[in-house]
Length: 108
Image 1 (cartoon, rainbow, N blue to C red):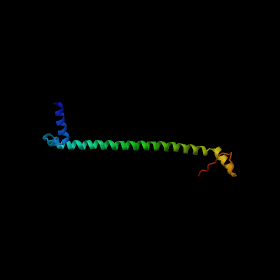
Image 2: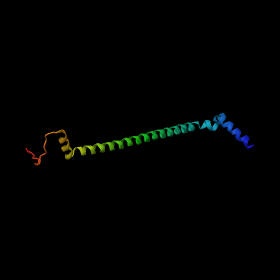
Image 3: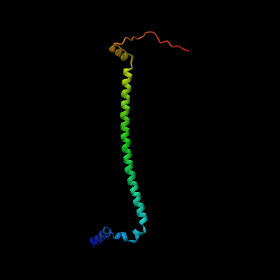
Image 4: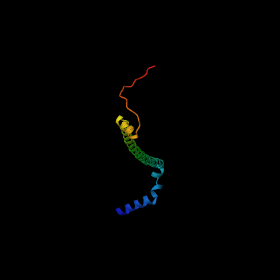
């Protein structure tokens, strides 16, 4: 008895008979709006996940750029020290001498 009732309900739902009932037909606008809302939520979540993935990628690139900038700054600071400049002058054989006298500023 129960099996027959379940089978009739199953056939009614998957056979399409349920779509012709008054309840479904009278509330068709509600179901269409509900379906549209479901699609909007799904697409919104998909867009959100894409944006989060892009943000994470950009954050990694920013971190890499910061490290690269720090490395370049460190190299520049090291190579602009007076001892490094003196080594380069001596290495290239330039006849530049370092003055031991203080710098004089000319005022107008």
